Length: 112
Length: 114
Figure: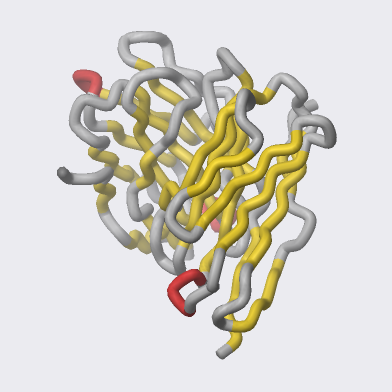
């Protein structure tokens, strides 16, 4: 069945280092993927998305990589800052599906 | 422009009481979603509205849960005879048009059932 999961529930990085958050999915029909950031006490906030006809997309300090061969999605955050501390969720959708499927989430903490 | 808003931000109720949670989606968004998020957990899909189509209620955990969307805009999630396990943050999201596209979330309502 469909599932979207994350390899690590928590990730700690030093301020200024790059962060990589991973996500695996099992539905080979998935064609749209989103990363969300959720800060404490707030709703998830859209970060970046990617469609299956791409393998890489860059935003401001963030890059999403999609490997359809192994059904793997990653979010890279460059020069991690204290404000990046949050829980990060991946979500996926297969064409025609009515809803996104969200992963469990990875908590990113920044060490000074 | 204004984002998705939800009210109340916090709700404390006693076991057995009914509660109503409100969501105001982004103006013009045709799709509206409700999710539940328990402490430290991911998002659990509850229900989805798209335009005038019949809602997708496949995620509602029991018949104590129901939702309405009036006039294609505001939505209300109702939980009857609340139980302690209903305690969670209830998140609403809307998206512009096509189902499954980027969803924009509200801040959520934190429900505590004593």
